[in-house]
Length: 392
Image (cartoon, rainbow, N blue to C red):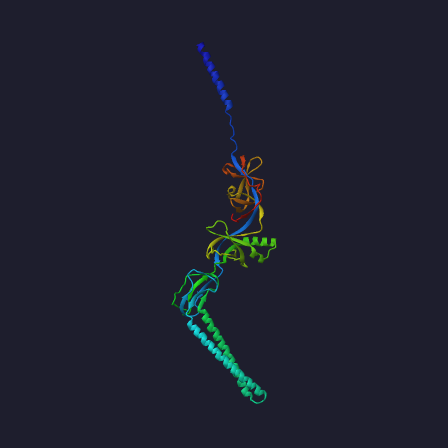
């Protein structure tokens, strides 16, 4: 029995020492702080824009109607043709109006001859009355005849002008440069009869072209305040550049100028009607299009920008995750401005030296430490002008 007790006790002592050793190494080690990517804000000159949605409208549009009655003798254009002012488009049978003009001219010549004869008779009577060789009654009669002849000549001249106008109306010409729609009548058709004029076609001017849009009351107040600050007059508004883009076009490729602003705000909508004019030589813009509109407000100003994807939002508004000097995350409330490409202007709440979390935001918990890794930034790049939209 004693020979077996010694080995057993040695095993127990060894096990106890082993367990004691294991207990000393089994201590908790905290995990390293999560790694996030941070970047300092960039700074550059930014032009702020007023944005709206507008629609295009023709500067001039007119229905071509028959101003005299008659048969259509010729149609002198192709449907959809681009024509210049004064181009002959329709010819209504002119012969009846030529005959009436000749008739009116003949009557005018006769009235002029009658007046010449009456004037001579009046002058003779006036001479005789002066020598007391004629009665006052004869003089009065000659004067009345002369005046009546003058009235007849005046009426004849008016009839001649009316006949000339009707002959001119037999030729329907373009009142301005534009595109003529498809004809509404055919050769040989009688037009101009009945109570209402016969529609022949419509002509629309496409160059230049208007863009109409509405500006909110808040934007109106902001623009007026900027005008007062810069000492601008209402006439200076017509020099303000305006840019538009179609729904299928990137950016705002079409440039024009402000043309008109309504003198009052619509109380039912709280908006002001504004119109811009654009050169449209290539006829890219057609009346009735919906377009995106923007106009600069004020002069370019230096602004602080961060990646738009770094901005979060909650019930209290927009925020950024900022890493302080102790590498602790802070949720910073900010006021955002316009967007510039993939960046967003920060109007308030951010300093140019702050380190903003731009990647790994799910690992950045406010109040806890992180391992910030600096992202290459263009903050040190040269300051260059940039354009910004007002969409938030």
